[in-house]
Length: 289
Image (cartoon, rainbow, N blue to C red):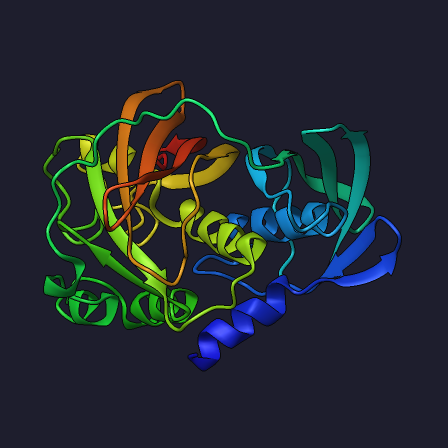
């Protein structure tokens, strides 16, 4: 296991300070605020700590309410809304400086047999044939060295490989609003399903709005032609998967309007099983002046 991955796992290992109250530490991301994927993953872990281990999450719905302060801890309060025979529901509120910065509802389900079908996995190249983040970023002379350093630091725990050029790699010309990324953790994980789901949640906030930028030929915050932030985030976990094995993140944007952009995606295991569906809307503004 890489040290970066161990540091991330430590970040997700929350301190329990009361029966339904947890505290998580924080760190800055590629921008001077708490990374949204971190808050979502920590909130999911907090909810999962109040549910039996044999009942994994099957969906989450979240809202980003305020910008998080990376210099302060985050307190997560869990409401036990329902404990049924098959389903369990939790609500989590993340608080900093006395104000809620994030809210999430999570539903858990005991495994059961049922109908089974899925959308087929789209074509994608073998991930090992694609450049690593470090290899790809080393070729972008137009990016500030500090931006490259921040990118690599923020993604050191994850091996994330774009199938095509990311928005900040080739911008100025609109492209199809579709992006593919392969990812896996930089090291093996334990067999805890909640840990794998939390890590996939963490990564899911990294690239989902790329397809919005591609449609308009924008490079994003890395080149300063867009100001953005996540507004809400929803995930459905369909089938078991491992975050330490390759996952294909197939993303697209059906709409952008009114200063907001919508991204939707499917995450597949390398052998073609549909593992997760993700939808997110974010603020996507063109800077004035």
